[in-house]
Length: 147
Image 1: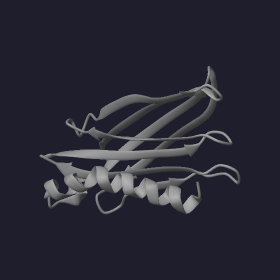
Image 2: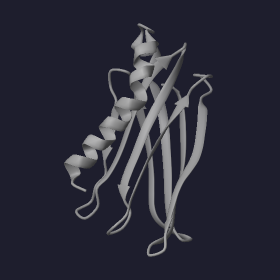
Image 3: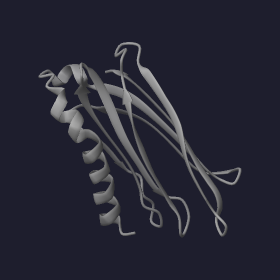
């Protein structure tokens, strides 16, 4: 996939995930919704770790976070947004990375931060298997609290 296509795809996923949240937010005070977060992703092919991504970042309704950590041979992106939904901030993220010549991973999720001062943590995984490529698994942890 081209870099432009992957960027547009990641932006579209974030937009679709957060559009209902932005419409329902109406908090009016964006400074209260600034979140300090940490994302950790580990991708394994079989039982061998082939990619590790860890970042601390700050995200606000008026300042989405984007990290293009591509290399000369691999396209890789991480994007995050925050919006207040029903009185609580929700941090949405998308992770997209080429993991080898013919395969890429793309996943995202939303973390609702109920306790803004203490913070919340979301863990999950995404996987695929192919007879020619074997097992691919990505594990992620997102932790966010009020900045």
